[in-house]
Image 1 (cartoon, one colour):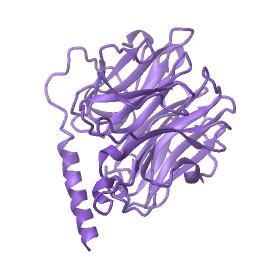
Image 2 (cartoon, one colour; image 1 turned 90 degrees about the horizontal axis):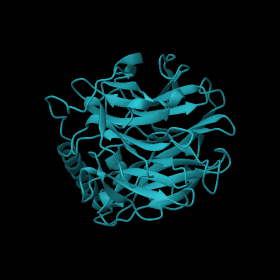
Image 3 (tube, helix red, strand yellow; image 1 turned 45 degrees about the horizontal axis):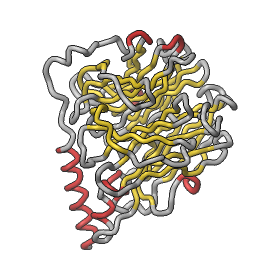
Length: 400
């Protein structure tokens, strides 16, 4: 009884703190650098009977552009009845085919879409997680989910038109002491320049069990969160855990992360810092061995001002003119004013942000389009967050 009561109290307190740490987007005129470029609504609240769409992922698969999302049936929350959905575009996002439901596990949750394209085999792999409807994050981190979170993969050989049955890969993708788990969210990458060309890499995150007071308070410690990378060297037939970062210092608490391969073969990672000691910034790390290890723990990058939220990465461009892009809300506390920043030295330095979506905005994903333009899929609203997931084409000459 004490365990149950304490767990409930802890979860309520944590939910209250989470709300307190997520201020509303400030009102007033947007930054004078902001531009309100025309965008296309890909997923809109209420569409096909879904209450809310969240957690976008964008992937180029040859001539096809795929937009993935969670379709949340009964409300905007992270748990409950959640399906994975996709829409396809054959013209770089100018028009979109009707919504397709990819994964429906009844009243339970299918979440965290993390697609990756295997150029060698011409296949799309979609990694995701599943959980009982009751298994929201704080419950899982407190060790009350009973090991219920699982990791799955499904594949398409025709650009997302049809899909294979899903198969569970939890034994390959999860360590025994991990509680909370999420793939991505956002696209994975196939390595091309490093020591293992052709390797598939999908960023993910986890928490491990804590030791304080029945494990409940310890399990909810943000310092027990960690980022990691999933690796496949056989086109997604098998997966294994590569780099793992869980320093447990509280200085940086890496959570949702994304990755991009640099021209020199290194892999650059950027991570959400879940209430570490340097609020208002993102954390970054590099791998020099194709994602097997982080060469050093995640460290804060002061130039990447951002609230506690997911962000997206893309190595954009071609023919030696590539540069690294990151998309994230640019306010240090609130999920608003989605902007792009660029690095032309592999993440060592960053440009000022160019705000492309003023107002409420949150999660996003990036993809390379034809002609050097970049596609941005992002959560947005006019008055509140999560009203829509929009697609924006950013011309190459308008990138930061």
